[in-house]
Length: 316
Image (cartoon, rainbow, N blue to C red):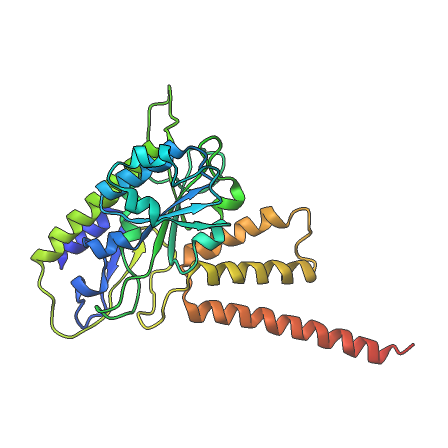
C-alpha cells in the first residue's frame, strides 16, 4: 500500500484510506483498461477532418475509445478522416456528437481543460500532462468492483483559438503542454497524442503497482484528492457530484445573486468565475450540492415572504 501511495503522491494525488482495508484494486480505476475506457476525449468544434482522424488513431494506439465531438465543423466520417484514422475507424464511428460542451460532460465527475494561454486563467495553476492526467483515471466512486467507474473528460479547444474563458470554467483543473518558447503552439492532433500517451503511461504504471499489492482485510473505501486540495477530508459514504449537477448549482446561484443585487448583469460573468474556482477546489459531493441548492431555495422563499409581508403592511 505504501508503494501505491508513493506513486499517487508523485503524480500530484493524495491517497486516503478508510482504515478498514483499502481494496486498492477495486476502488481505484487506475491501471486498467476499464479506467482508460471511461476517459472521454472531448474536441470542441474541430474544423479539420485530418485532425479528427489522427486523434482517433492515437486514441486507439493508447487504449482510449470514447471520442466526443462538440458541434464539429467538419465531417468526422468522411474520406479524409478515415484516411488518417487507418485502423481506428471504429473510434470515429463510435464518436458521440453533441451540441454543447455541457452535453459532452453529462455524468462526468472530473474534467481537465487544455490551454496554452497563461493569461486566460489568472491566479490559476496550469499543470503538465504528467502531473494532472492520472487524476482522470482515479475513481472517487463509492460503487462496488462490479460497477463501471464514473466517466471523466479531457477537453481540447478549437484548432485556431482553443477554449474561451467561459468554456474553461467547465473544468476543475487546467493543463498546458510544456514546449519551446520559440514556437509553443501544438497542432490539435499532436496535443491529443501527448496527453493520450501520458494517460496510457499512468494507467500502466499504476496497474503494475496495484498488481503487486495484495488487498487487505476488511472492505473499505479509498478516495483521491489532488495535491494541494483545500479539502483534507472527504466522506467516503457520499458520492461526488457530477459536473452537470454542479453546473446546475452555478446557474441557480447566479440567478439568486442577481435577484438580491449582489451581482450585476454586466459583471456577473467575471464574478461567477471566482465562485466556480472556489467550489471546484472543494470537490463537492451530491449531498453538499443538494444542501447548497436548498439554501438558495430557502433564500428565494424568504424574499417572496418579505415581499408579501411588505405588500400587506402597505395596502393600496
